[in-house]
Length: 164
Image (cartoon, rainbow, N blue to C red):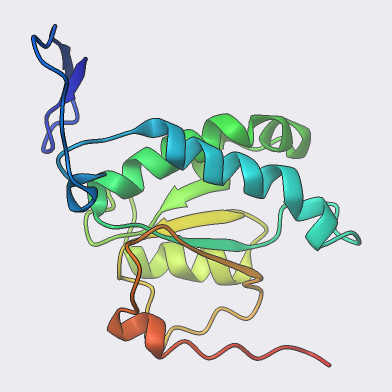
């Protein structure tokens, strides 16, 4: 079984003597299972064309993660699953799928939010809480919440305005 350090994300492999028992609240915090994340991302990838038949590009998508480590995992999987679209559009995976959190490195979160709002890429952004109340992203078309059930404060304050 792979054991990942939460801080460094380094994985070390160990043979467990007993079956690992964990509770739902431990999932994606103390225990990471990639299959549910991959299933959700793959289902979205396979269905966005039916949801948006007139679109030739992946809709501007915002995914809310549980925490920063969970966001990193979602970004990795989304880059893998959307690689055909990334290659077709001729951009880098890093530009196409971005994490915007308080721990984002290489650019200020405000600059990344502006790019998400005004540029073609990124198409998919994963956040924990930095894009929340009061952030207006008009081209945003899809919200995916990969958090436990129940509304967080920012989720209860989301207002969706649509044409027609």
